[in-house]
Image 1 (cartoon, rainbow, N blue to C red):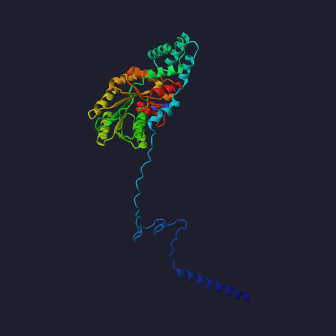
Image 2: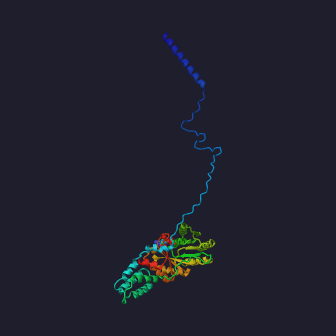
Image 3: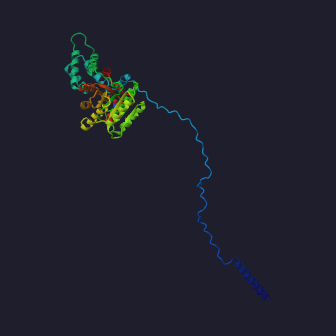
Length: 385
Ligand SMILES: Nc1nc2c(ncn2[C@@H]2O[C@H](COP(=O)(O)OP(=O)(O)OP(=O)(O)O)[C@@H](O)[C@H]2O)c(=O)[nH]1
């Protein structure tokens, strides 16, 4: 009987459990729960991203500009070029080989007996210094005459040599630069020569000489062939407050030269210096172009000075160039550059003889004021050391 009660009890519990389970499920309905979003996919937020700053609708706070008094324009610091008078003395030591020619000659001339071998050695020294054959023979003749012992005291060899060299370099030439025009017109200096002799540098240095002498100047960049030449010129001008008239690269040099002179006349400047492109004397077209530059300028006012720039280190080659240039533009003065790099100062004598035109300026270095007015006595003193 007991086991019967136990079975009935278990059956009752089981029936109640089944009823309870069914009731619970029925309360929730049979609709499957909505699938939850997978946790590893981040839905794009509809909120504005935090790193984008929405334009504020508020009026922006505008800072009132601070009212500053305009700064006074700062005048560029201009250089004060060295006065020309003192230059040749300062540059004396720069004369390459300065003293060697003089010492060589004096050594030979001081010999007790001046025999034929000695005179030949003297001739060789002079020719080696590019003085030229004819002037050398003349000089030797003079020295022979004056140093001949004819009884009495032997004259001082140094004094005789100095006097004869000065006579050879010719102190009677007018070496002044014609930088002033007639009446109110400016002086016009045209600078010509073959490539790389130092024309642009000379124009820049000449501007400094003019400024040092309290003249007003204007530069014409008629070397339209080489773009860098115009910039080079502008840099030279800027340093001393001299303006440059320029044209388009590859443009007509004559029109730049014309415009520079026209402006010089309008602005009443004292001197216009015109740089030209380097050209070989055997290129007829370029030489004609140079002639045109001069003619075009002279429609307005005369060119007062034509400076031919020669590189002293090219020696006798310079003489051929000088002759051809002179035929085209009527050279009035020589600028002998790079004398600091040449032991052949005798070229001064040779070129003057060849052209009948004086050396007016000498270049003795790359420094801005290393261009000196030429002076026969100072030059000979530098040669003699
Ligand atoms: N040592 C020395 N160098 C010089 C002198 N004059 C000019 N030069 C140098 O020579 C070089 C040529 O000078 P430029 O003035 O450019 O020559 P350029 O005749 O205008 O040249 P192109 O326009 O190409 O014909 C430069 O490096 C100058 O610094 C001088 O007296 N002594």
